[in-house]
Image 1 (cartoon, rainbow, N blue to C red):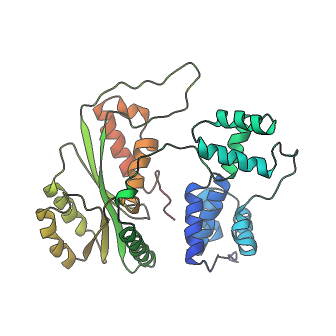
Image 2: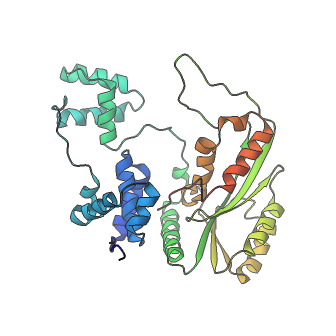
Image 3: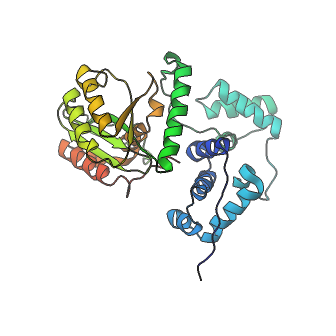
Length: 336
């Protein structure tokens, strides 16, 4: 007899958005996993399918779904465990958070200041645990162009893309995200776990560059093109001409409005592609986070490329070939 299953049948738009955010940025891997589980269940993935994806027991998945049905977001949390009393009370924990917001680069200075103000000696590990519990993570500070963009246009475009993505999830249309990225022998990896007293050294080299153009959807289907030469409008048009022959339904391409994409040669081709079912959706200026293929480039540069790729140009080329060829199988990105 077939084993009965159950699904999370109803999620509001707000719940979906919060679950997606928790899945991407929550410091707890368990909460990230459970959030994804709820989203997958809502998309009619069975308990057995989810258990296979995460290599866990189906009863565990069933418990997660039941906890969500009973308590919603509170059900994603681990149940409180017994242990010794906390060193800092809630007001003192708020002090830790306040101090790190004033000085976000030094946990040691925060620990010293907490001791000065409370008389309690805390380790940097305790401070880090409090910060993680408050949803903070240690990551690189990045420059931002948000102040230059039109926020109203950005939000309007974001809503349009979300609607298009929902239609794609329902099978009405297809939506792909297009962009290009360059890779060279100058390493992109700023940090790595290393032995004390030792330093991983990569030979500095800047000769040789590989440019990659790609069309990717949220199911990790990727059509990519690699070039050792420069990229111009004619090259991009050639890639679009190849890609349009593969589509089987109306397909929307989300892409930025860089000068090369706004060139006369490219613009002249848009009507002909539209007749074949391919429609271009240009993003507002300074809105790279709306182009989901940007995530792929970051994953390749900072996580998937092995150190050996930087030893020589042929290694870099082969490593990129291997990674691009295994996107969707060995290498996957969760866009849920």
